Amino acid sequence: MGEARHDGLAVPGRVILAHELPFHIGALAVHPSIRQIERGERHETLEPRVMQVLVALARAGGGIVTRDELIESCWDGRVVGDDSINRVLSRIRRVAADLGGGAFAIETIARVGYRLIPVGTAEEAPHSPPAEQSGGPRIDRRLLLGGAAALAAVAVGATLLWPGLSGRNTPLPEAKSLYDQAVVVGQEDHRQALAYLREAVRLSPDYGEAWGALALAYRSAINNEAPERVAGFDERLREAVRNAELHDPGNADAAAALLPSKSMFGRWSELEPIYRAAIRRHPGHASGYSLLGTLLMDAGRWMDAVAALQAARSHNDRSAVLRYKLIVALWSAGRISAAEDEIDQAMKLWPQHGAIWQTKIKLLALTGRPRQALAFASDPAATPIDEADGPDYRDRLQFLTALATRSPGDLGQAIEATLRRARRIEHDTLNAALQITALGRVDIALGMVEGLFLGKGEWALQSGGKENFTTHPLFQPHARPLWREPRFARILESVGLEDYWRMSRTLPDYRLGH
Image (cartoon, rainbow, N blue to C red; front, top):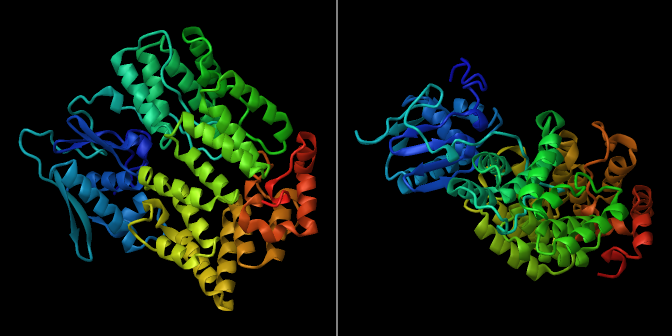
């Protein structure tokens, strides 16, 4: 695992999928940047960690990769248990057996490490480790597309919520295929979707629907990535909107890309009529409903949020993020059975989605079933690969144990672990405060919330402003002990929510007795 530079972009000691070149293992074509592995007409998208480990093993060219080397290259040197590594290796072995037809094997050398052994036939493409590849058989260019731009998972703002094709121009079949693939993967892997769409409009420059979807992808990138990673994206977004309007007048994706969505905090009164107007203009498009639902969640209007998010889902049932928001809204509106039904369906569709998995744990734990939550969280078969690593997973189990036992020792340890995490991960302060509330320390939780929103005390933000704040956790059921506190009312007044409720002549559900 040397330090010689690879492709001028990445250091081989660390696996950065966006910079890895495609390679073959026997008959299998592996495309790390888009996390796909294919054999003939069949293909499969791997989880990021699984692909990282496959690349690391392939780099060794049949040599042994030690456990420490694997952790350094794929887990950034974090503390990782053997179970986490074994789960990833088991997933790779299943791919080798199912899709690969035995094209390779993963061998475990006791107390030494692991190695990948290609077992392809003479007719199959030769194995070529990605760190050394300089040529090889030509690969379909629609699969040579990943890592073209950085686009994070959406938390707040526009998501890639595309309706069916409706434009006037007929794209090339390859461009249409790329658009269709972007629609499928866009909810889970926006980087890959962005790359697909760029290639689609390159192949068919008059493809209005793809230009509109590309504009929406740029909007999501701008909203969710660090400024230095999206330099120039504003102009690219405007170009995409212009082309969408030129080739598909009235394109709903292009219109959605122009909706303000980066930050809703403090802008509830300004943005709600804008989103409602967007819904009136494009009633068959999910983005307006999704943005409105997100705003209503942040205003504590859970029943209204459920209606908006259900409408969004009726126009797009492929978005895991949208489904996650609907689950949270249903639970917070008191519709626990409906929320659990949605979770069960979502986990079948997206078994590796961390937010949905975490929400099921929270719902069980905070509706009087902490032991069921602990059993579920401890089940390796149900745990997403990326959730099983490091201290956050152990802290979650400690929290659930404390809720189940309610022993002073367990409660104290869970509180300390939660506070340590909040100090380490500043953006997690609000969720940590609500967890502290569930553990019975309302005084500590209020201090954390005041620090976050009012800039007071030890929990005042160190890293900047409030543009990415979200307030919906304040109105979830486990925040109930905070609602009775005069300090909580002052927080709501200070951030502008009381003004919003007065201007909109509405109230949060918790004040309506729901």
